Length: 192
Image (cartoon, rainbow, N blue to C red; front, side, top):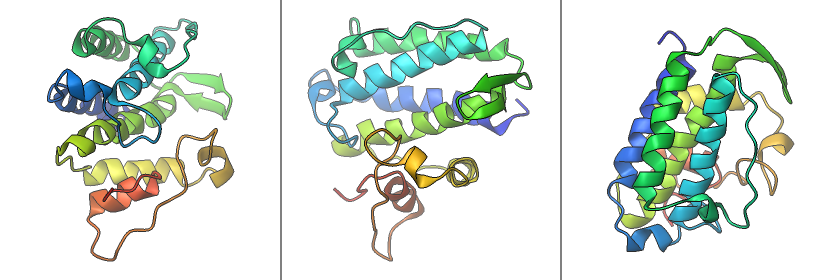
């Protein structure tokens, strides 16, 4: 892949699945690092995002499902729900024109640009479900750098707060690792 967003997206699909495979049945109902959500909520949210994104990549208009909690979207066993969605996303990406420009709520963007936030989301949510159960997930430097290049230009009010993707940035001690600094930047407490 020649587009960094596509590469990080594919690697993020793999990384999320690697972490998800380590959760026991009981751990899916435990609190994630994503405030207010269980691990199953994170899976439902991310699975829906991946499903809708694959539809966009195929040139289709997805229909947003109705749900009370993101966990309601998970049908069957967690990995049985996730794996077909991830496979469909990989297939849709393989056939997508990443240079195609489209109108979006943030203006005209290429398909590769539209993949940027979903790519970042995969890595952040892998951390969200892995950290509380003790999985030592390092965020690669290229994910950190790509995320800042893509997100930092947007006004904070678009990204942070109740309707945004991230909460307020969390302060970390001076000895924080690169991953801890990244996670804190996304509004999560890396040492909680």
